[in-house]
Image (cartoon, rainbow, N blue to C red; front, side, top):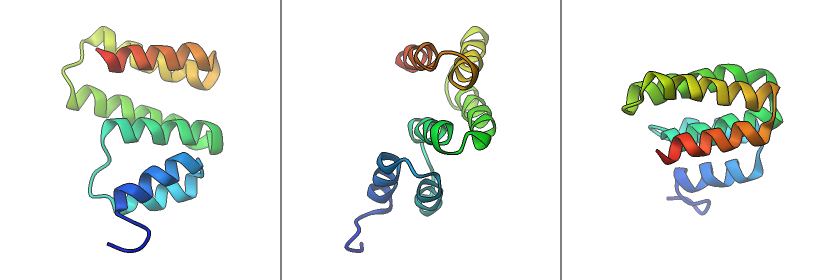
Amino acid sequence: MTSEGSAHARFRRALEAGTPLMVRAAAAELQRVGLDGALAICVVFLDGEPDSFPRAAARWVARLTLEQPVALTDANLALASMAALQHGSKRAGAESVIELCAR
């Protein structure tokens, strides 16, 4: 381990900094980014690199449906929440994603 800490610690710091380039570099060091980390990447892209958000959001929803037991209505809610984050009310979209993840 370097003086900068583990790859996971660098990833967390990059997320906190909110710089898409740093997040990409830190994520590349990890063998796997969990769903929660992938969602955090989406948020960073939403604010710092909005053109990258739609693809990241679609990938997150796809992973959610593949990795978790998600009903079709919840998958639809996940897509609608991501669309709300991008085009509608960020607060409503965030609240929907939080509610969905809490299930």
